Image 1 (tube, rainbow, N blue to C red):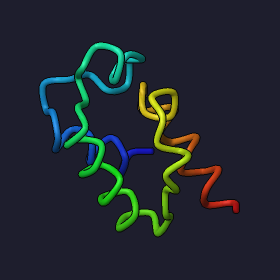
Image 2 (cartoon, rainbow, N blue to C red; image 1 turned 90 degrees about the horizontal axis):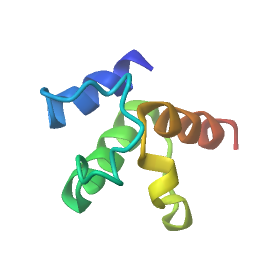
Image 3 (tube, one colour; image 1 turned 180 degrees about the horizontal axis):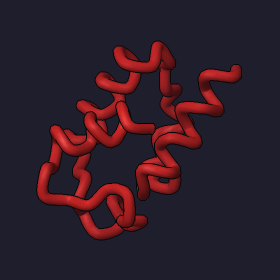
Length: 75
């Protein structure tokens, strides 16, 4: 999780990613951020995020992103 938080903080150092649960809903992460994030996650965690998993619910919080990474890592 710490590595994910580091990736998120590189995108937006001014955001408290540990407490926010509205990253997509409030426009904190935009489409370019998501593309960058997916690339970083693929590199850091060696998981591939399929297109059907790229939905707001999976990216609205660090916890949701982490749950997605864990789910994909188990597959």
